[in-house]
Image (cartoon, rainbow, N blue to C red):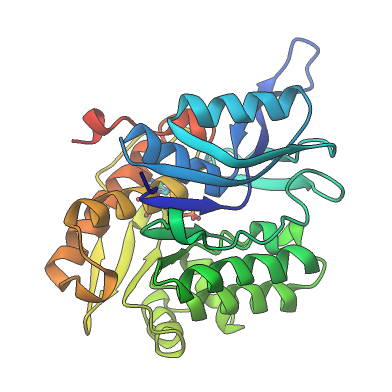
Length: 313
Ligand code: ADP
């Protein structure tokens, strides 16, 4: 059977800080992660047919990532294992549980991903990607070519920039990557900080900036996440806002990925193309996205913090 979603991009190890170790230095745990992989596992666990396209290293951490995807009921027939070491992100947390990322990227498994051409006999309903694996020239061109190939084949394109400043030598290139993704996407999830960055403006009023960005890149379904404030959404000429219920935040890693998984889950259940969705339905997609995102902040890590569908319902 064809997948409902083909998630293309990064699967990596989040070396996640969890307090001081026995010698008094920061202790790190190897947690499976990567934004696109987090989204794929969330959808797999929630009983969707999801396939992951990307690469892991032919090493112990690569085996852990492959097993994690497979345990999450994600099809790995488009996941290759190759000689470079598995990519790692070193995730440090501040006192509020907010994280920063340093990457071991060059020469590792997620660098220079090849093009994922649309396979006419195996087309997904939705192709999802981000800018993480676009941070060098090969990955930049190949990700856009992969999305374009699926767009031409009539597949819905889903995009979450997931901008990680420390991955990019040149912020202008990152902005071009985000704009390239926005220009192809039918469904966009973007954070308020990324909206300002994509516009090349200092942070300002999130709503005014979201409106300006949407005028330039008018995706039929457009979600701007606002961290603890939930999200803004735009659909069919209407804007709306959705706030989360209060939660005890432990770690926000993967919150945006769970948000987007929640949106795609609800869209697949609705059975409509993004351009057919009504504003009241978009409000329900946003509500489930916000619920999924905020539930994921109550545990550490990306994949380990994905809430179960029964908990969410
Ligand atoms: P990203 O991880 O892409 O930067 P956000 O941080 O904006 O995205 O968060 C995505 C979603 O996760 C939000 O819309 C919200 O539902 C939830 N979320 C994030 N941070 C918090 C928080 N501190 N408290 C409650 N919910 C949160």
